[in-house]
Image (cartoon, rainbow, N blue to C red; front, side, top):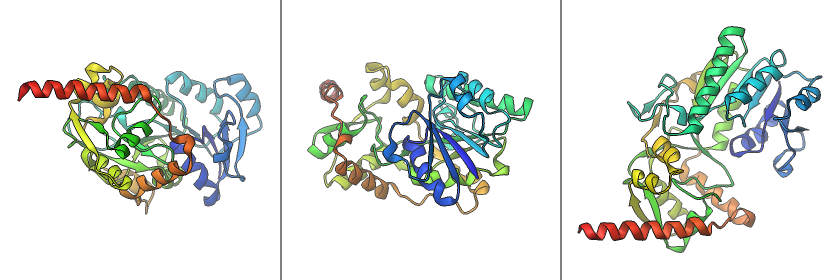
Amino acid sequence: MKALLIGGTGTISTAITALAPKCGIELYLLNRGNHSELIPDNVTVIEADINNEADIKEKLKDYSFDVVAEFIAFHPDAIKRDIRLFTGKTKQYMFISSASAYQKPLSSPFITESTPLSNPLWEYSRNKIACEECLMLEYRTNGFPITIVRPSHTYGNNDVPIGIHGNSGSYSVVDRIKSGKKVIVHGDGNSLWTLTHNTDFAKAFIGLMGNTHAIGEAVHITSDESLTWNQIYEIIGDALGVKPQIVHIPSETLAKVKDEFTGGLLGDKANSVIFDNSKIKRLVPGFVATVRFDQGVRFTLDYIEKHPELKKPDPDFDEWTDWMIAQYEAYESQLS
C-alpha cells in the first residue's frame, strides 16, 4: 500500500508515521520539513506548503496513492483544495475531523457516529462539521472516496492531557501539581472524559487505511476507558508522587472570565461523554485500545523529563491561575 500523510509529525500523526512502515506501508509525508527527528528513515518526505496549491500540483504530478490522509485541514476551503488536488490520484481520502463536532449540549452522553453534529459553542468544531459536509457532498455527487475519522482527546509524548491550560501547553499545570500549588479543575470534577493514547489511535487508523468497508463512512476512534476529571488529575498526581491540590470552579464561570474557554470547556470538555466504539471494532476486527491512562501518562511524563525543551513555562497562565483561585475562594468565603 502506498500512502501520503499531509502533516505526519503532529500528536496523532506521529504515531501513525512510526507504525505504518512496520505494517508494510510505503509511506510519504507532505509537510514543510520540520521535525525531521520524528520521521523514520524509511519514510519519504515531500517538502512543500500544502497551501501553495500550484507547487503541490507540480510536485505530485507523477504520484498516485492508495491512501491520502489529511491531518491539518481546519476549514472547508482546505477540503475543496484537496478535492481538486487528489481527485483521480487516490483510492481513499481520509480526513481527520473531531469528536467535538458531536451535538452540544448533548441529548445523551452515549456517543455513536449517528449522534448529530452541532456545536454552536466552538468555531473549531463548526468548521470541522463544514469540512465533513463538503466531503460527504463530494462523495455522494462525484464518488470521491472519503473516510472521515473523529478523534477525541488524543495524547502522546509531548503533552500531558489536562482540562485547561495556557498558550504554552500543559506543562505549567503539571509543574504546579508537582510543586504542590493549587490547580483548577472545571465544574465539580465528576464529568466523564475519555483520553486515548496516540499509539492506540494509530492501530485503528492503519486498520482503516485501504479498507473498502470504510469508504463513505465516518467513524470515531477512542479508548473505552472513561474517567472523571478528578480521577485524571489524581492519576497525574500519583505519577508525579504528589496529591494534587484541586480547586473546583464552575465551567461557566471560567468561560465568563476567559472567553477562549467557551469552546474548549462548554463546547467540549465540560460535557460527560461515553463513546460507543462498536463501529471501529467492526471495521477493524481485533482492534482494542490497550494503553490505560495511568500507564500512558507515565510514558508522557518520562519522555518530557528526558526532553527539557518540552518543559515550557507559562508565567502569564500561572499568574492568572493564582488570581482566579484567589478570587473564587474569596467569593466562596463570603457565602459561608
